Image 1 (tube, rainbow, N blue to C red):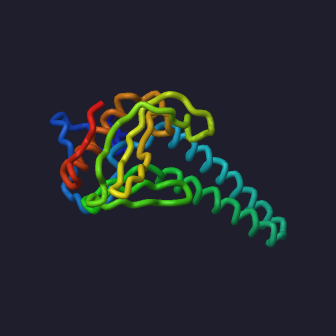
Image 2: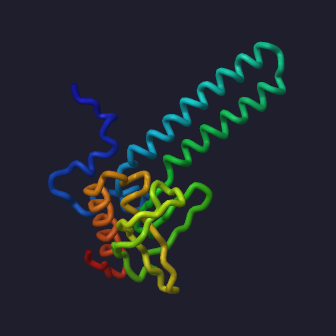
Length: 186
């Protein structure tokens, strides 16, 4: 029995491997599926939020409405954090490239992109302070600044080297289509 909800986006499963598989290039899209570490962490946070909501109901039933309100607020913060965690990553559209972090978002129009390249460098393991040697997709801006887009050791690509390569190639194809077209080979 096919389970269509298990495949996040059928555009990644096409056999023709189109570089820009979407019809509407004006809409912001993530050119890869979220990784199992990111989804698993968000699922655990949502499970914790369900227990906190249950505790808020029990506290409200006991008559302590102030405590129930605080507990409900904590549950809402946990849910918002889990949803923001799922939203994090690199997004592309015809307008530019967007790097969504937990607390901040930066958008770079394609006209300000000098190049997109994959480099070997020390990268953070799962976003923690520990660094390991790995691959990173780096965006160079016209002002000389660099923006780290993806790493092969973040929560989307840990133990998924093929997915990192496919995502890096897709972002480089978007740069070739809408940006300056300068991509560095690996």
